[in-house]
Amino acid sequence: MCEFKVLKLNSNNLSTDKVAEDIIYMKYNPQTGESSFSDILGRKFDSKNAFITEINMFENKHEITIIENNLVPLFAKLVYSMNSDINSARNVALELIDAVKTQLKI
Image (tube, rainbow, N blue to C red):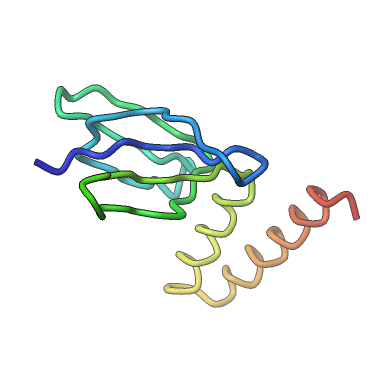
């Protein structure tokens, strides 16, 4: 089987912590900004603001690496809105720009 470990990239971007294992399902919810992972027993692990940076199946590692940031839901919202409504996408883009400025303290 191909169960995955979920590793969370630390803020230094150099190390990871294992946050879940035996994961067989993942789904992103654009309304909540939450990624939901389920293991082989049906237990769930939710990660708010998660972005998958790597899926590794080399050498039987079976690892998914995520990074968490408050900007992820806005970025995902922008991508979804660009597929359907360009006017909505402009508004989301402005919201994302403001959030980036806030996070960078500009």
